[in-house]
Length: 455
Length: 180
Image 1 (cartoon, rainbow over the protein chains, first blue to last red):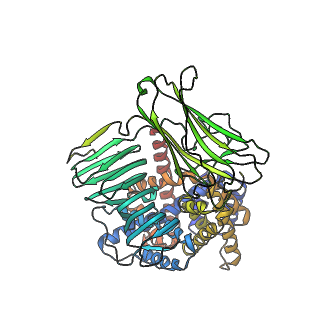
Image 2: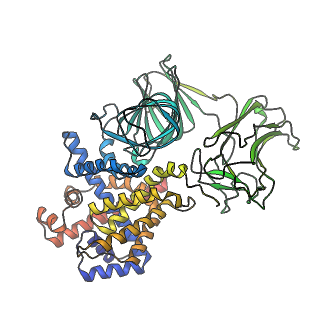
Image 3: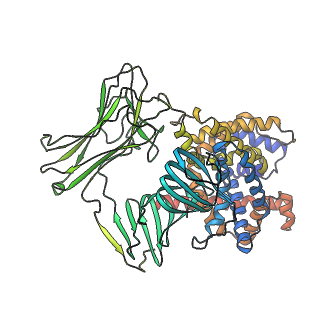
């Protein structure tokens, strides 16, 4: 691509083109997709340069004093206007501002957070499900701006998006406190944090001088009333600090902070033996055929969907069809080795049904778990509880099976069954996060001695 | 796929989708209007419209592409109502550059990190030119005046700095891809 088109594009962004040059540029963009691609790349560069330079200026200014540069002050004025916004639309403010805030915040060590002014808006309530809140200074409404202070969720779930765009899902009973634009404190209960790149460095304070610092990740924390925290890294990596201990924890590992112990215990989460457990991956373009799951599925009744997801972006939807089959099943064989014989196993699957659309009436769902010998003899059959219309809607229901791996097991057959599917009444259930683990919940344990750091 | 439930789930996921789409949509709007204030207002309008109409979004399609469609209409309406004598792109060109922004979506994340690295390696004078143009939002003639250059020389300097940044970013992202 010649430099001529690049000069025209830069001239356009600099408002420096005359009429003839503008006509020439527009002709090239309208007729030549390669020129349009170059324009988009340059557009991204210009936009990022604006964000970078303003954020850098804010960082320098906030280090020197509490005064804001003019650009930042303008954005704060704009921020205040969003009080009048309907519902979640205000979330965009956070995203718009995030690029400007973050470079500045990134220079602030978590151990010395900026002083937050009383009444400062730190985030937004982006969703709730059957949420019951304890006393609050202001009504908790979706789209409402959230100030520094505690949030006491008695039951249900609530989702908060920080100014940095970090998102936390709280599950009641839970007590949480927003203490900065990219920092919170968990006092009790369960929290799952999703931290996009631009919110990198999100810090979560825990009891006993502990802190979790995101290094680009998704993680879940369970903090029980005895003050014991389990930090499970679902994706990416976190850094955990407690006193003078610092450790990094990668995905599929769990760190435990126990007030009765001076050390942070780190253990590996048991390996999930199920392939494509969240129905995220597909081997081919046919959305009805999830990779690793058997081909003996009926496309008339099931497909991967983004309509619901417990984790990740997708789940498997099973639905009725007037001209379909009475039932369907989806299968996966999970192979095991003889050293697993006699060890405990646990199987789980999550099922969801909605009260708003395609609410189940007649259809139902259950799963079989069948250890088999090499000659395909079924050694035993276990069935989960059956999910029917009587079960609660709008929440993920966990079905579990446990047992001891029988001798001579070569593989477990996982069979996901739905029945009563031939119906004119549109009904659906969603499946996600199938899991089969073998062995004790702690497969290995490593104690990090006080003062030791792998950082 | 049958019966998408325009529902709390899509609303629930809106912030996460928007976080990914927002840089692309923001860049597109800014490219189309070239006014920071107008671009900010339009971006807010686009996000509000996207949220209000989230029931119409087909989750099997690109969310960024869907919001770019909303942005294109917002820009067209903005152009029709704006009488500033500024030459603006026509409908076909806006469509072409919207499609190009969608194609470039995957470049936004890693290239942002690369940009920070590459700016840090620039000579002080080049950084000054960028600060005057982007932080202080000065036009080329004002940048030239502050740097004791002719307007033509300032425009050429900025063009060369941008090209150096673009080359540096490409090298860095290509290198990271090789080492992944």
